Amino acid sequence: MEKVKLKKVLSITKKEVPVATVSVSFLSDVQTIIEASKNRAYAAINIAMLERNWLLGKRIAEEEINGKKRADYGVKIIAELSRQLTGIYGKGFTKTNLYSFLQFYKMFPEIFHTPCGKSDQPLLTWSHYRSLLRVLDSKAREWYMQEALNETWSARTLDRNISTQYYYRLLASQNKAPIKREMRAKTKTYQQDKLEFIKNPVVAEFLNLSQNTDFSESKLETAIINHLQKFVLELGKGFAFVARQQHIRTDTDDYFIDLVFYNYILKCFVLFDLKTGTISHQDVGQMDMYVRMYDDLKRSEDDNPTIGIVLGSDTSRDIARYSVLNGNKRLFQAKYMAYMPTPEELELEIERQKEIFAEQNYENPNVFENAKKKRGKGRK
Image (tube, rainbow, N blue to C red; front, side, top):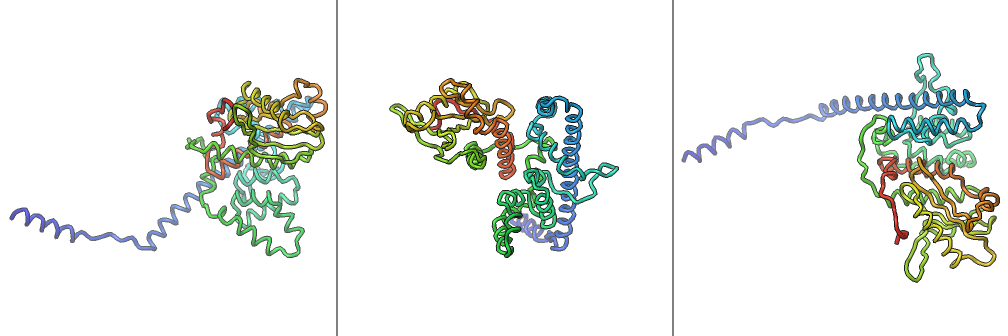
């Protein structure tokens, strides 16, 4: 009987507790306060990061002028500065990044020109400016910058529009409306992420925040190979695309070569193989084996010997190794190297693609360098 009474009392008490309701206007006001605070924080971080990058570029430019009597001084000082800064601060100060800071200062010298050292004009994010550094035409660069500001383009939208020559296509067209509609349709998803800036790994790196380094190595490798294929074809040095992941079969094993081109100027096949981390002697030996197999199985009588290039994703180390025509290094340097992409060109391209991939996937741009190295007899 007592238990029944107690349950009844508890039931009545529970019903009498008033339920709190949050009005739509109250919730809206609270959200407005939170979003406004976040936006101010993002803006402050962005300005600080841009100012740091611009000032670093300015200081590097001054140092280059001081050592201008030596032709290679600028290259060596940036390499050494990168090494020391990486030792002190960790990632974020690769040679590629330092060159970008230098370009940023040279291409946008007026951004922080005021007496107090602050900008007196609207600013984009560092990811926007890094895309703009690719535009050598000053008129096109200014146009892209203003459109990005006026139309609030995301960094990914700007990067895509630069890559697809949006400015020049509009300039050449009498009917611009279809081109604009197409652009908006294809970049719609890029514009939807309100947190693009703060999720950017470059920002997290600037703030020295730890990041989740889980990632798909195969996805990143695929992205680099995709862009590498396009990059080699755009060099204008006689390359024609032949195959990707080309299957080579022997009596005992199967092998897959990442990229195969034919150079019609040199009249030879050129093989590319991408390795995670740094290049080992085993990687070079594997490429030598690929070259010998390709000469035996694919090369015709009129073709010159096949060339192999092993690429390493760790751009702080040896970026590329070339096979040298059965040991004839002198002939390779004299005749062939003029038509090959240089290690510097390959380094810049791989580093750029790693950073773009990281931004688009909100991952750490240096994760590829931490990946487990591929070893053994090729990917099967």
